Length: 245
Image 1 (tube, helix red, strand yellow):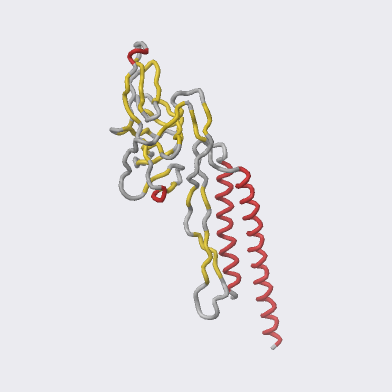
Image 2: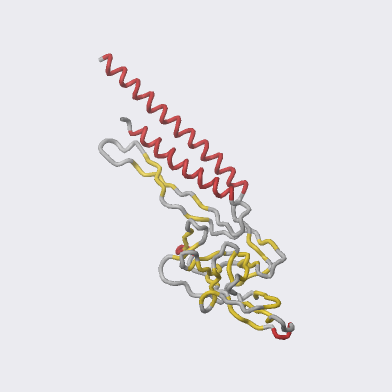
């Protein structure tokens, strides 16, 4: 069978995956701290005998947009977001160290600081533990301070510090749980990273750009399907000519 059919089928398959990815981005346009997934493909010639006239579309791996989203002010002192480059370290559900740029934090029943999704926040010495408090605040350097329960504001004391990191962007990869992890050796805390309290970072998905991508992929998919029809018609005509001979 003509290689054209396989080439068109490969392109259509990759474009369907890209459309699914773009639709996922669009669905998370209002998700706090969401990082847009990117579709990356490259053209590779079909290997084999004969003249190399066919080129396949091959997925080379999926990345994510590392750009920052808009910062939105909130009323909670435990809403935090990164100002500039950097990440907040978390303990993911599988126990590994993961990162996010924005989180709405709470103190659970065990006195541990966690995100609204249940991941524990990592500090200098593991998960951040917060004693009973009257009020709590997070400074720009990640220091967590409280006024102990039953005490006055003059007793404000630092109880922990968030682990803030700024690893090489080329080491970062996004997993299916939406969190980012670093490949290679462990990432050390970076004292230059700053956070903003009473603030959340919105999704970095561009609504206009995502809609344009959806339209573009849909049109390219139509072209791939049309090429499959052309390959089928060519095969039918070739069979007819062979039968005449």
